[in-house]
Amino acid sequence: MKARVIGIFEDFKTESYEQLNNELNGMLEKFLAKDAKISHYKTIKTMLHSDDDYDVICIVGLGKVAEYDLNMHRKLIGAATKSLAYDATVLVDSFIPNDADMLDYAQAASEGVHLAQYQHVNYKKKAEDESPQIKIEFESQQEIGASVGLGELLARFTNKARELYSTPANNLTSADLANIVLEFAEKHGLATDILGKCQLEEAGMGGILAVNQGSINEPRLIVAKYMNSSSDEILGLIGKGVTFDTGGYSLKTAASMYGAHGDLGGAATMFGAFCAIVEAKLPVNVMLVIPSTDNVVSANALKPGDVIKMLNGLTVEVNNTDAEGRLILGDALTCATQMGATRMINAATLTGAVAQALGGKITGAFTNNQSFMGEFTRASEKAGEQVWELPIFKPEQEALKTSDVADLKNATAGPGALIAAAFLKEFVPDDIPWIHLDIAGTATMSDSELGPNGASGVLVRTLFSYVEDFLTNV
Image 1 (cartoon, helix red, strand yellow):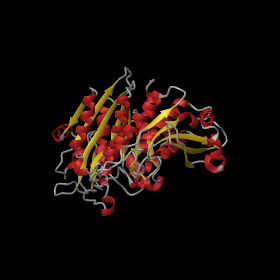
Image 2: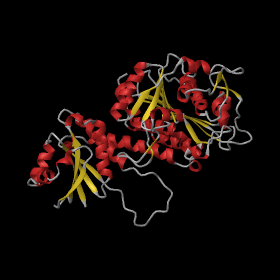
Image 3: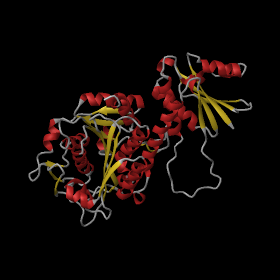
Image 4: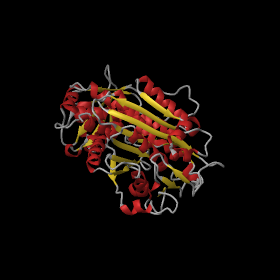
């Protein structure tokens, strides 16, 4: 079987709708007349119709034109095609309000379809009669091929981030993660620098080394550079790559430890965005930096009360070994600065507190530069991924400096997400614009229009949008 997917507005009939209705000799209009609610938001119904090419018309209610936007568009097309069990053609023109940008809507439609079709990698025995993946095509009176291709690319690398997040820790060590980045970089002729334990010791990256002390797997600092612009601007994308987090001696509960292989969600997001930027050949300079280790318990593991020395020379008293992400990110932020990053964005599944504050659909964001934050927020709105700026207050910054034996504590009592951001800020020079993204609440999602229950690949599309819209002309 094969279907055509058409959108119907409550108060507006597109030319595409009129053409299909004429082709069907008014059958579509008669079908709709039987159920006036069919054009309302999220209504999806099918009409049987048989000709040489199509067996089914899938009708998607879009609601009122004034209430329809790019994010709703992406989700509705995702929902409609996710429910299909057979090949289909999406009549893109029928989903476009008159004043909308066709290319943006075509891209979003492609994103919606490819995100919705994603299935997490699993290790179950495959059934012999497992059905093949369905094929979705797009039809328009305009030339939308490039936009559809870009939407597919962004969805593909969002799905790659989902895949990395979901991979069990026994199948994804720091060395494995480094090899994945290296393979991509070599394919595209990019410069890389992969630092193992000996090189980290020589460099003085005490944060990464301290978190790694208890592990039998060596840590890695993974760097890949994409330099495709004559501009002096270099964006550093820094992602926390903890491949499994027990909490160390500040041990997590059994319930919170399950799924702790996803503590590399920041690295997954940044790698996905980096790959999309490279494959789209955007004229920018971007540096990917991933500090990676696991955080486990052994006789050699980091202990509460230990004092470590970071790459930038600051000493840190470790109050909580489960606040390990900020230790490895501190070294990575310093490293990115030393390698020439002129602005930086880091992402991490850093604190449960941000999820308590903002829930599972809004990413907490912190910055030292309001102009930078404004641009990033506009990019997130375009991508349909919500971010909300949270503050870095002096009380949290001062509380971190109350150790009797070191320059900083790695954790203090108080609002966890704000304290973590205040700690990271100590490793960012004041003259370098910086955004910290705490994705602990948004790195996973419930089953939705844009994919199954599990990893979300959050902010891959937002990061790409920011680079495309605000850095390509710098």
